Length: 125
Image (tube, rainbow, N blue to C red; front, side):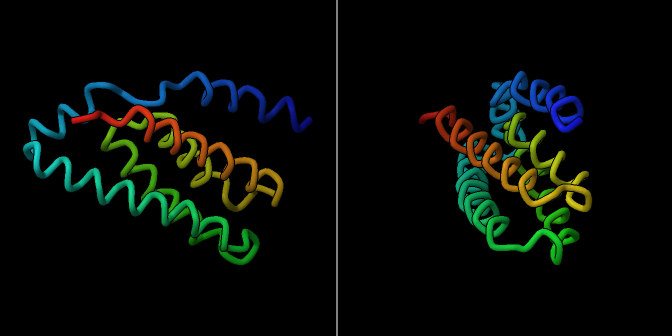
């Protein structure tokens, strides 16, 4: 049962591109290069801290906070076009109350991987 319900979701997330190439350019057009770079720097710092925070929170006691933090991460990742990270954050947001501890840790591992992949594809200036 576990593989049947999770496998299609994981395949869909794995198929999602790491980054939407035009997202950063759209942000630059909206707020300028300097502003976009500053906001992106804050995004990397806050996302790193948020991913670490998830690992310190007990799922059973903090599922509402985890869902809120995931919602914020989803929005921020979407702003920069980090599609895979945003999709994983959405999944965490929507399932925080129903995940078991193993599923939660597996999802955090996937989010860490998506974060690392996003950093590797960060536009270089």
